[in-house]
Image (tube, rainbow, N blue to C red):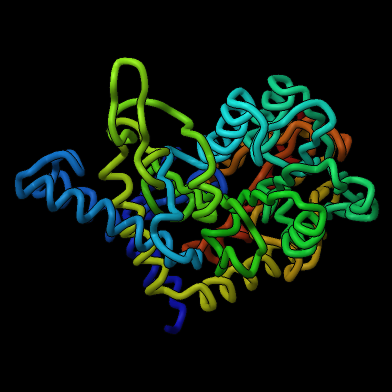
Length: 419
């Protein structure tokens, strides 16, 4: 399908807004949350207007329709990332919960006694300095609960994963390696398969945080060499409140539940409980049903556009953004400066102007970006900065919006030079 950004923009009603005194909205915060096309909005409205009911338990027609739509979304999500079948897809409320599901399941396994997922002193979890807090804090807590040790890959000055000491980091003591596929700060695309091969050779499992990659490029769990992979709906044109954990079925079979309650049970007595088969074993209580249906619509939408065309469009945007941002005196881009090595999130600093001040000036011009540490404090410390401004592009952005960003940065420099 030919990529026509003007046509695609018509699918997103919010992009017609004018803000801050009549400025056209330039939305450059999709790494935080993406905008939603009419196709997704209409699907959500149709579900609530015509099919709304709880799933699996209701014996009436609406319940059947809701269940079919919910489980249909699971099938779509599995096919989307190359899962063997839909029973390898667990719905969560976001990728943060997906990662915590694995961490707490390992904690529950440890409490139950020795086994594949149990941890103790001498065992190690390996992450990277590039991680979002959601892929740091759960492993810190797991190590505190079990006595295991947390270790991590560093980052090179040009924003790549430092794998020079991979043989020292991944050893026979490593139980799990958890790493980001594409950095939410640097845009760096990591060599996941190389790290996964090293982990598997040492007998370790591999979890991949694909929150920033799945919305932008084809992702296949087998090609990556993952054992677990998580992504989230709201960064890929879908609704908030729904995420996905994919795991190899044999691992889900072995893992103890994360939460207890209704729906995830097989039978309950007063003194014991048996649990449903995966994936339902990990989906306690009423799930985000409409949100799952919306995610399915987002998958359909992105599939119709095609990732090859979308990636080609984004590469052009990345190249143009680098061309217009790099020459601005005082601007420092964090991460790779070659389009092919990165995704479309640009974090940068502006000399003598605080990142929040940069974002405020941009916001006054109608340009939406994010400022702060982007839930990646250790990574910012590695680059010697407290925070940064981040602009992130997606399928609906244009070269003209990259130009507006560059002009806005210059305006921020002029404004604060006068003070």
